[in-house]
Amino acid sequence: MLMPLSLTLLVLLFGLLFLWFTRRQKLGKVLVTAGVTLLLAQSYGWGFKPALQSLEREYPPLTVVPTAVKYRWIVVLGGGTYSDEAIPLHSRLSQDSLARLVEGVRLYRQVLGAKLVLSGGEVFGSGADAVAMRELAVQLGVNPADIVTDAVSQDTETQAVIVQQLVGNEPVLLVTSASHMSRSVGLFRKAGVVLLPAPAHYLVQRNAGFHPADAFPDSNAFTVAQRAAYEYMGILWAKLRGLLS
Image 1: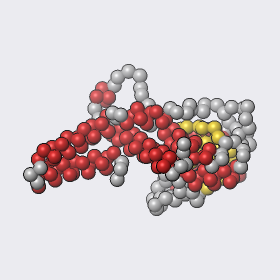
Image 2: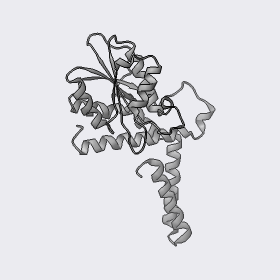
Image 3: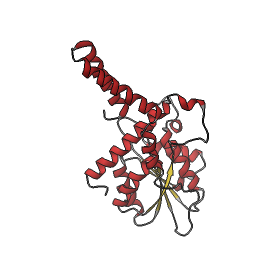
């Protein structure tokens, strides 16, 4: 309900109700104006793109795995999977899960003897991220013996605890979406996991120069707004619970 698009529609709805069914025309006009402004801000990314970019660029991308430390574990956090049985399991991964898995497999190929830990269970009727990611990882050439799955955890906090129980004090490469990395790093370190961030799936990217389409609303900007709100609320909630400093 607190997502930007939901709030925008609620503001517009109440504005129209006041305009059509009450005499409080001024309040109705204010609400409609506010709703349209919010809609424009989301469709053009005003405020939301810089906010999300700040999260995504907090940790640099990991192009090459450093050799100074022996990394035996590559942990990939799931980002959503569909449960539509009419679709092959390996094709049910969300864009987040797919991008994270590809990054995890890329790093796996750089580290001899590494284990790929795929984490994510079923949430609200969705498929288990770990199960779908495992199937696709095998099809991408990962040795099944090198894959460890956590199909139980339903949130990042639980993933951190389970991974810590698995790896102990050994360092890990942590792979998740760039926007999700800040919260993940905090929760994993709180659980005692020694890690090196390996962000993937950047939503805020800019091309050099100007394209005519830049002058028009962009449906992808709504995704950016939703993700920015989701991550900042997640960080706030974790801080209120004492899980992040």
